[in-house]
Image (cartoon, rainbow, N blue to C red; front, side, top):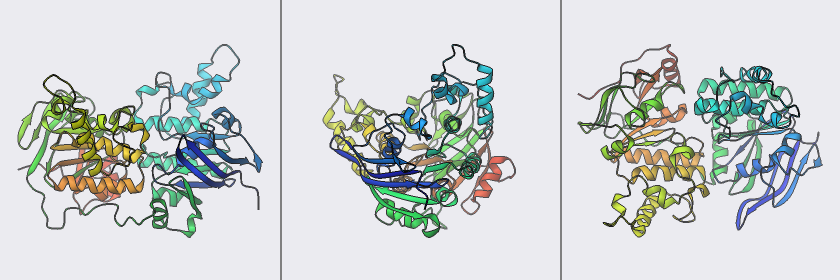
Length: 508
């Protein structure tokens, strides 16, 4: 048999006393798509950062074409033909898409002046393979999903032999993801080998040739996709069987309770218009639609994070004047951002500080001093309730896995005893075990009487979690789908303007 293109043997990585990887093996064949799976904290990103030269192994060997190599930096990795697309956006926001895409090549230039027209022409040719994004625009002007596509296009400008994709579809719409899959298959046909990290089993089983599973920083197994099932992979990832990813919905004949939240004809005059819906006690309301349709803007408008020009919000029948996010929190409405690390948590602050940060008044005395003992008790209570895996409540949030960071972000919302929670992509980029835990938590919150609204681009989550789905198109509600009407086809037809459905229901 031919020598593997890339061989990892016995790689171990320590961060002080913490063992992130222990004696891990991995092989990548020429022209294959190889999935790497594991829960958050399993060591996937650490291993990929070692292959990409970002980190150095404590011990172990790396071979390319059978020859031992030392990948001492990202530049060395690129010289070997290794490109990495990080899950987290790593672009320079104040320069153009084209400049970001060719930044590595620009840094190697020896001529004094930049030929911007040639740069933009070459960048646009690559970008057009993914999406219609103007490469002359600054990255700061783009949505999260468009920035993710720029990250992928940036990697395609390299002369890659090995392309590492870390959760590449986490911020993409279904159509954008399908376009990416087509490109990945073309790259494979041209002999490029791809390491594909994803928590989405449907993607792995439709796209990949083999799958390797890591658990707790250790190698578990490698199998051919044709010889195993998604359930096999999940069991090996978590070391146990997850019987139900989505909790039971409202049972047939079990009607939701009284109306607890109403949105009446709100708009901002620009991104969304005439948005009306009602939420009843006990149900989870899903909001679907293509990225860029206005879903996030609607949530921001409800919560005072975006100025509204029209409409009214009511909580338990009482009209609320919301001009800022603090007004929303005071009214019992909180928002969980889709950008967890950008605006969901404070990475450098402790878990305790993150959980208490939305409302410090109950934790301060008459002199304005913080009662740290009360703060600790609050944080410990929510950490236990949400099963946050941590060294302690004083640990910085950046020390946690993605799933546990998301639990802290949710705990921060729950700490103010909200009446309504708007959750934007609540499980983006987290593993299947943590997803199941968060899904169960959301159903428990709904049953306890808290209003839950979930925005999700992940179709199985949207359909599996929601009791009703509102589909948004071009800033307006295109229609509502009840539990018996919710299918992927129905959502996509409404989102793309092909189908029609009944209007969103309102309280009597």
